[in-house]
Length: 513
Image 1: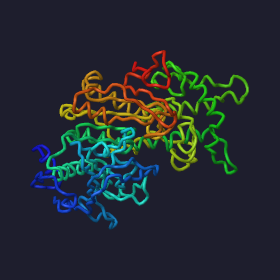
Image 2: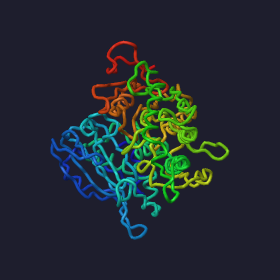
Image 3: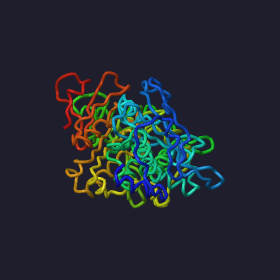
Image 4: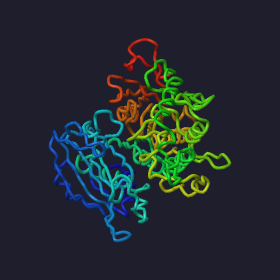
């Protein structure tokens, strides 16, 4: 452990006055004796090669894992508000055949669960643990009683601070100490990769702890949850409620505001306008910023038929896609891009498919006070909006953003606009492109899924960028939605364009243009 890491550890660990000395690599069981203030090692397990782990969100299983040492523990166990037990729980996996690097995997939703430390985000088909990384995960300081979106922990100030920004840096530095003790040397390089809440965590780390990680991958970040909730939980439902038919009690039936036939019309017109701009009609819009679709082309010129949309529906669609604005026209959260997933139905509803799911609990409200709600929904502890990344960049840090263009929870334009502002604040895009990139993922929903190529490896490029100075070029993507198809993902301002000849299912026949 170098002197800088030692100092950070001293500061983070509540007054720790000595650093753990790196020792000869020992047995996993020996780590039960690891000591650090306010740290409890609760379990150590030597896991044999060939085991698999369930992936919480889809119950699929990973490929057989290598032999590894798993260390579990808790930091700062305490009794908090309401007599509830809190503490930052973590799990660290250290493979027998270590590549010398460390990766922290980001959380999801409200966290509160220690997910298996495998390193699954943006790694294609090969989790980081299988590649030889030591991998750590954490619940960020609380236990979720309803896994997914249980935010009751916020009544406890320390728990909220841990979730907002403290826990990941603390766990990362502890993990580095344990790794050093187990292998006899500290990690050569440290990486972070997460999506959604994990994406926000990556941004927070680059902004508030700029020297802890050498490379960060931030996907579909939940960077302004309060304002995105204003968009999807109030602005969009209200716009659709205003045009929806009413039930016997006079309440709007929001699921009937835009019908299946309406969505079919929109989807067909959108593809007709923007699909082939990349040189091939393939049900993918490779250049979302270049898509100039206007739903007004579907306006009824006579009576309403199945082949056109009424003026009120078109107005509602434009309002929804434009994002929440104040009565004076001030944009408080970005709008959404026209993409293939906006008309998708259950279970992963697109922006133009109002109903239960992504839009939260059903609301029958007919108005929303955007000014009032915007003020109430700014969350400075959690929001990750600082653009000064000079320390991160000067430290040699590399930062990759990606965002699904059909994400209905968090607008890809919010992440993109942050990236542009960050670039402006740090010397301009040409300068920032030496250490940061942004990728749109066409058709992808929130962190995956959709009519998209949602399997891609960003870990290999960022490692090569950090350790070899190789700036990422095209990243190849595949996906279950289009079997046998591959495409290059291109960093902004480029997009994938067909070269004009060759198999249109093969990424080799496309270029970043």
